[in-house]
Amino acid sequence: MEIMTAKGLLERYGLTPVINVSGTMTSLGASRVVPEAIEAGAEIQSHFVAIDDLQARAGQVIARLTGAEAGFVTACSAAGISLGVAGCMTGTNLGRIERLPDTEGLKNEVVVPAGHLVNYGAPIDQAVRITGARVVPLGTAAMVETFHLDDRINERTAAAFFVVSHHVVQEGQIPLSDFLAICKARGVPAILDMASEYDLRGPIEQGADLVIYSSHKFLGGPTGGIVAGRKDLVRAAYLQNRGLGRHMKVGKEGIAGTMAALEAWERRDHAAARATELEYVRYWADALTGVAGLRLETHRDWTGNPIDRLKITVVPEEAGLYAWELADRLAAGTPSVRVRDDLIEHGFFFLDPCNLAAGEEKVVAERIVEELTRAAKRKDGLAYTLSERKRRRIDAAISWPD
Ligand SMILES: *Cc1c(COP(=O)(O)O)cnc(C)c1O
Image 1 (cartoon, helix red, strand yellow):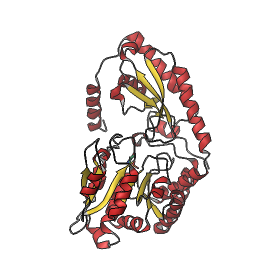
Image 2 (image 1 turned 45 degrees about the horizontal axis):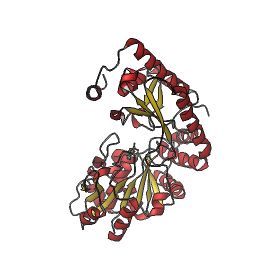
Image 3 (image 1 turned 90 degrees about the horizontal axis):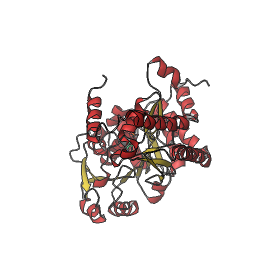
Image 4 (image 1 turned 120 degrees about the vertical axis):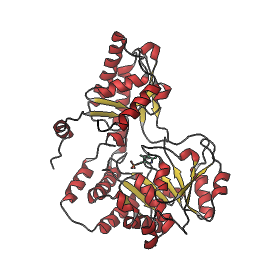
């Protein structure tokens, strides 16, 4: 099958090509979709199919890969969180499903470690609250103990929610095993957000009741989410498509594409993919060694996913510009090189190799050297602080589409 190249389309609409060294970012189109998923999504576009049947087949694929009893595909992980929480409140009662977000008479509290109340582009508590559920934070940001969980579970508790992610506070949290053990002992369904995590089997093995993944992150699928888990809860979550789920509908192409991405993941030579990524990181480390103003370090993924990134610290006095200025100048070029800058307040950013196409690694290194050379010559760096950058970014966001 002939796959339309992005270049033609970007040119037609006057869009700047992007080299994504930031990771699977929604704001950049998440990931490079694997050919199997593109083909499956394209193929199903010209057919009709009973969606309930297609979702039941998707459930079989999800069950095989995760070890769960059942599963289905959602519009995205954020949708999966909402539908999972809603299912824990309504069960299979169709009247209650239509009544949400009115939760009168239902268990409607969701306990969440306070340090897990993250923002992945939108605040995670909102994904819970739009169902009508009430978020009950456990402990404080960097101190959540098992007694907090024990204390806040009561007869109104519908579910307990736990997030595995680099976004969460890493210190002082309840270990997942303790969290799951308490939920089990108290009879509360545990929902696990694994949107960006590679481990498909671990959570179910450890006893999570519902687990959520994004199709469009490491799996390289189309935009979509995966809900896997206990059959009764998966069924209750799926039935939300007759209610709240309608507002976050996944299409046949998203379901078929997610199934194909999962099957491709099962067959992929993961060792070879990782070796290629490591080559990119080594290439950057070599190409940038000795460049004035930079300190380099290889950095292992925060939550143990098999990803190494190059951490680049910019020393402003030597480089003549701040880390965020370098990041902004790289992004402003053509192609636009987008580095991973979520921790840039510390003066460093990362190069993430997950979404690279061969050859792009060279452009990234060249662009970094080019911008540092230019800044040294023009002495036009150290021009704006981090607060100014933040303000500019918010101004830009609220003036969209201008
Ligand atoms: C990305 C992410 C989400 C949201 O995933 P979408 O599929 O884009 O909705 C939720 N939780 C975590 C931890 C994430 O990293």
